[in-house]
Length: 554
Image (cartoon, rainbow, N blue to C red; front, side, top):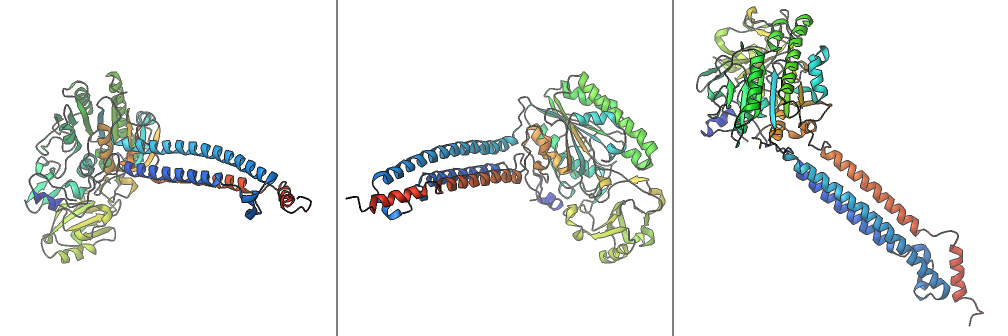
């Protein structure tokens, strides 16, 4: 499926990434169908059991050809035993049918529970605050003492590692969080971009042209278009740009000099006193990314200081929400766009030593370099391919599928991907002690996600979700119909208090196991009732002989 905007097909060439509509109730119809099928099986088993139990036990008539004409005590005993067994069979079948009916109710309840999961369970319109601390590596939570953040997690949920999208840069991942799309689909493919058709350039200081952003519909636009709702943002990337001719009702033009306190004050004011009410708000902070670049994540002295400051900001956020009476009713997600890895002047890849600059242009440099050849593409590719063993070189069409980073015109013809901790340079002036952008399978590139509020479970931990899964989860919380996206709601649903957490295969396994056990028990009951009691078999045979064969009877 291609993403396109209202202006026609020109956009579709940039957004050929495969999408899927991710419903908040994905899989519910399957579970309901399975529930009905298994319930029918259980009912059929009960009926068959009742019929089997109601038949005359085989052991009562060893001389079967004489049974229809049996007279006297033998015939009377046969009728009595048949009546007795029929009564037992009826009782057992009634008990079994009762159990089956209960099982049917449980199965239908499971189907209905999951089927209703696409609708928010809140009577009031929920509010959601999304907070990003740029460059917050997932394992900072384990490696540093962060009491305020840990208390936040203790009362809510934690996803220990979020698998973000490639390339692991700020603008692309922040847009993936709010659209649920891979970079090839939403079109923000790097922090620095070039469009060969329009000859336009994009950078963090030149990002206000809606041309770059209109390839997707972010959640704040969807929320804004709902009746009696509005959105707000404090510095979140893209929120000060007209996207599909819409901005949030309340936003701040980006400036890194604006302190966190001012951003927080604005957001809480908008959430508490706006008309129409702000139901979705975003808050962005540049740290610990800036310090991670400056010092590197392995500088424990400086990073400990910076992370303590961030932890104090989390404490300020929680305290302010409590003072305003919003803490118990507001849903808060704290996450990040990417992690950080240590770099070194001993791990440099010098492009100038491999190829003359006159042969190509560098659109974005490190650790994923976007190369636009000026001469023969194959020649440039071969020279770069042999440049360093610490760098993968891909023609655009050969970029691995797992990156979801191929089907967009803004992705350049040649992509260079440095190994973790290596830096692609034209000169030493571009070196940073910490960097990100590397392969998104690396743990050092992963952020975390923590959340608290009435929508979330309490004290729950989960190992991982994907960045694109956050979007359908937020849509579910807000009661919004998601746009086409690459996320999977079921990956994140166990974080939510209104969701049934067993996966469909687990439910099927439990039900099938229960039914197999019931079938075995039924078979055992049938076998027990049909076997001939050893203490009475001779007396029945003797009665048969007395009735038919004794010569003294006239």
